[in-house]
Length: 209
Image (cartoon, rainbow, N blue to C red; front, side):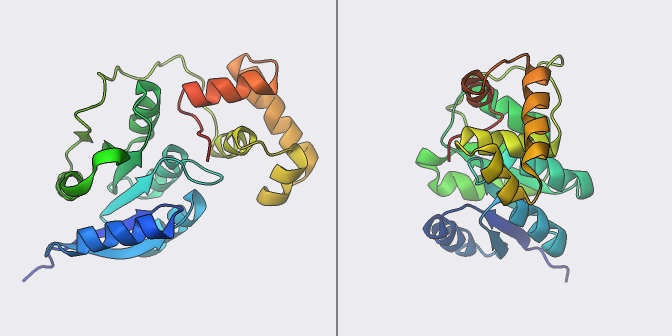
């Protein structure tokens, strides 16, 4: 008899949150949690290692947000169902995630049984959007396409990191980060860091973590 379990990878930077979701999901006979990750890069690595059917991932992760991580995961595992959990109900955040290829987006403030139903639907290939969200239009095709590294740098800029601090985190030179910062501003038509941070948050490209 074939294995009918839905394998799930949990991604959240808070251990207690992951533990709560694990208990909730593993109470179900058809769901098994095969691993956990605490940030975007670890999620990418664990997705490659474990090949889960569904990834339940927080949007606001350290260094790389859930949308950026999802984009990387789906490049090598396009059939993986990714469900984003977020405190953000703004359409820009939802659009960013859908554009990255995720199948579901739920608000974190009232999840309970919705999570179990959403995991099953995402595993079956269905799209799941929290009913409390406003209508979400299609992504703007004119919006600039940033590279995964640029999105990672942008997230760290939003978190208030200096070029030197970002360089230390990513293992590159401060000059390289300065080039990324300049490229980001040119791509987005922005001329200072404060406006860059505001743009990134408003458009769901990064979040304060």
